[in-house]
Image 1 (tube, rainbow, N blue to C red):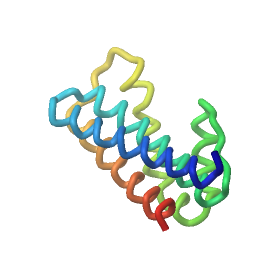
Image 2 (cartoon, rainbow, N blue to C red):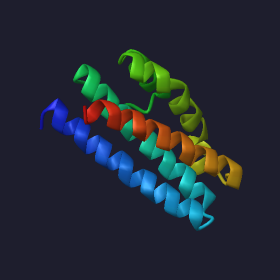
Image 3 (tube, one colour):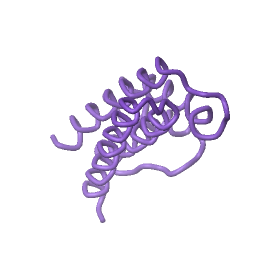
Length: 125
């Protein structure tokens, strides 16, 4: 699979997780909504990086992911703060017993939506 095909696959994954996040938000499942929003954002980052640079790295190092997105050009740099906010919720939403609030989940889904829009703008064009 070439970079263009991989970027489209990551965009499809991002959209799927965004839809799941929205469904979980509607169902009052705040942790699941935030966790899905984070996965959406990570896939959107991969789609953006693949589309603009032809590569993306797979790493649990969030700082490296953010740097990679910033380095991917204006679109990446513009949405890097949004991904940063999402990644700050990752551990809490996915691994800790502290519950994500409705407001946090709602913001996470909004941020994921912004990342999806940005990814779509570079992958489809």
